[in-house]
Length: 369
Image 1 (tube, helix red, strand yellow):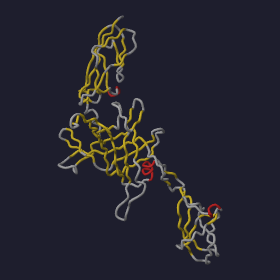
Image 2 (image 1 turned 30 degrees about the vertical axis):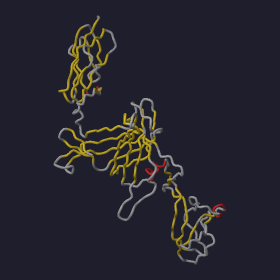
Image 3 (image 1 turned 180 degrees about the vertical axis):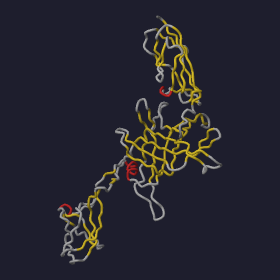
């Protein structure tokens, strides 16, 4: 993906970040900084209306508008797989244990507390005897709550490989529901953007970051397992469909987007301190300001005019205000609040502190006396 502004090509490359938040609590559900590929794309079908002789095409009505996303993370994550199925990762999971045990007498005693395995039904479990195997003979000997292997006669001093199940505190467990409902969350994707220094994208430096904000994404079920080999690492997929979201009403709908609804936002934030480069001018809107003596202070209506035509309210702490005649009206140096003093006329000057060439003035008439 390339961004073009003037004669400075920009490229999206490198690893991106992604974060998914719970839309109710705001808790972080998942985070990664190893997104190696990814894309969001929009699509729309045209519903054709035909009429008349030969059923000629009358018009096409836009139908089934979608924004979908597909990202691939180089890291392994049960949390990300849980998003696809609406499932949550829990700790202290049941886990298979294989350990070497040297027999003391004819009885084998395991070192951890045995538990029933996930979904492994047995009459022995009902009697507080849990699944246990010795070697590879396939026989379920069972192990009791005290860790003693049942029904197996060991040879004194001989070492055996014993397999059973136990709860491990830091082991993670993710249940895959039979009727899973993929998570709906708030998603942010941060992608580094580079600016070309030479003749190719390889010769470039970091220029800024592109943020993708998606107020409501519904993940698409899938990617529950792993696909790895000795030479290829397993990756984690993040696949979702954005839901139409209305900020004003907090409405969410998969197929009923209105003119006020959005699927998401893209924000490009340049690096460095050149934050004023996008300002074209500083201006005060409304013409001459008239204030009667004794009135409450009024705000100086100053705005930034951006290079694309947007009008933006500035952070007043970034501006410096002065009054030419403080005997008629004063102004807060960094607040822009005009306080009438006496009948007369003064000129208020507003200047961008870090860029003095951006300045503007307004006449203030103080009336009464």
